[in-house]
Image 1: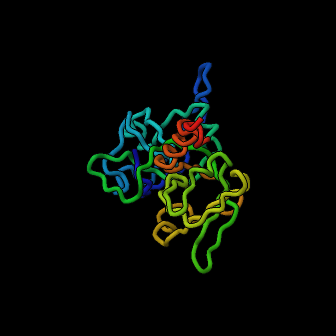
Image 2: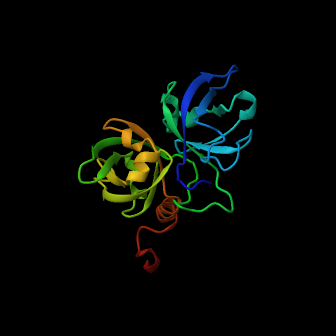
Image 3: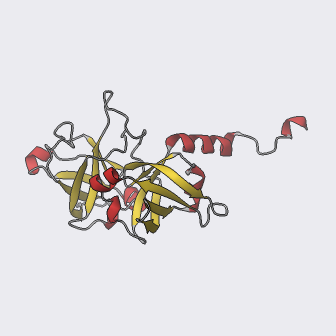
Length: 222
């Protein structure tokens, strides 16, 4: 579990296939400084770290490889996230898993990416707003004034256009100067892709209504 508050950045070092029949890639991330205040504790093998919002497990003790963070990434993760597009030098957001004593400055984030959203517009004059278009099947989870996680960053939804049955739908987030200074979101432009995690409560409610509530209210009267 995470909070979506980014205090640490890293850069992709390599993304290479592992030997064997399975489609598994080894992702290596070079953090700015594994002992910087962004990490509450020096990470070790087995720890969970969100990389651009995607929860991954450290497979090598960073202390043994000059602080480099190494993760194994499976085919489904590559299909549903932007991790497969990382190249050496690509900036990424890093967040350690929350603990019982962690301040919930953002919202409860699972690190389970629902899909990829496309940046369709950026407005940086009166205020910094970013408009994003997710897949149509994710639009029902986008709630006005609700929470959303964009590339691992906890944000509040500022505006929504649901489109027609989700098709053509979009939402906007407003970025404050602190977010622009501490994350890579300010560098995004139209056409860029980002990992998107919708709010878990919204997904639970929609799933319940879709599968367990009768669509015909008159069924009980028949």
